Length: 493
Image (cartoon, rainbow, N blue to C red; front, side):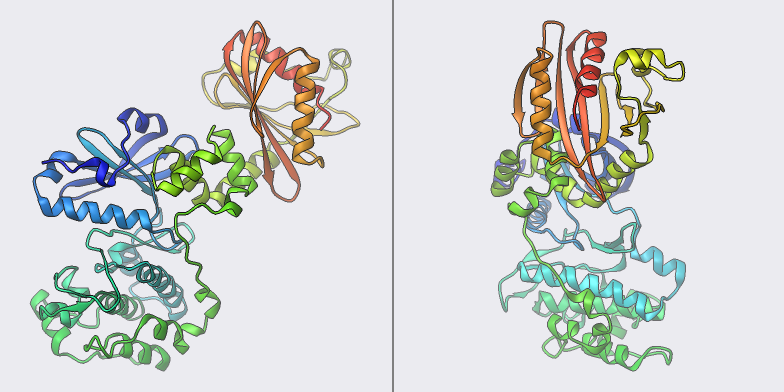
């Protein structure tokens, strides 16, 4: 029996997946799932896609329930130290979960490489783990499988908690019975088969991770799993002489065998060892809801506009938790905002050149002036064409050919965004173009020979840069080249 897709999935076709993503290498393979690296084409950002076969899931009712719960949990979480779900796509044969790609590797790899790390390094890591877990607990979710393999590090060394396959929802004071997780990181109550409070299990596992980071070994190491479990139940934690008294005190409270006496998350976060870097404890907890402030962010709104995504569709997707293509674009842009901003700024700043903006006749007379012709944009390969001329007005811009029929120009201007839009509207009328304004920053223009779009985005950096794209849809390319040049060169920006 197949899972009912309407119960917890948004329904999309495989065609949608192929349009927005390009698959790359395989990152990992599990019992009924495979994770592949992919590129989200509209943003050019990397994502991880978990691929599951419907027939394998359908063979086991527990797998169905577990997957359903995992997706419900992922849909409800949005935190910088918790893996972010972007999109859910289902076909007749497969289910695809598009998620954040964390490229720094597992925390386990860091432990294996360094053996042990300094307390200040471990403090940053464990505060971030505590931040993510505290958020999950506030959302009524327990992880139940915290271990170095499920803690990834991004490019900046920040922690991201992954793998919510054993997680569950809980109510206050609710106890669990299911034994799950790795025995090495499990507390005594799970090994004894007792009922247990889920939050205290996560706290114990986090304590094992902290001890291992600082000491380079598990506090209950043994020759085999049985020996490890026996040590967890009966052995007192031994601390090496090189760790601080504050850390020893904290670990003693966390690795308390009685879950009732074990430290709570607020007690951990207020402990003196943690408070050495209390600025890292200023957590911001959010949900995947519609935040008007974020929607108005110029970087996010301009990126969405370039991709042809309306804010209305994003708000609707967020409100209804659709996890569709529109919501994915918004979440990916939001998650990669700084990276996209740096990318756009680098394009604008590094490739800016000076061009003569005087009349076309003056350019023709200047023997040193290089004309931009249609040949510059006909190469099927991506390439950049830089033009350098002199002019008293010193206008900076760049030409970049992304594909043969897209022209991207960046321009520094002191004019506000609405005046730029008015100027473009005015000039399209002056050169007898028929136009429709699709959104505040997007126009559809045409005459009898060509149809194209104009998209304008503001890049926020030290100066105001405007990214203007001319995108040919139909018609004659030579006419398109002639019109975009005429339109751009007469703009007073």
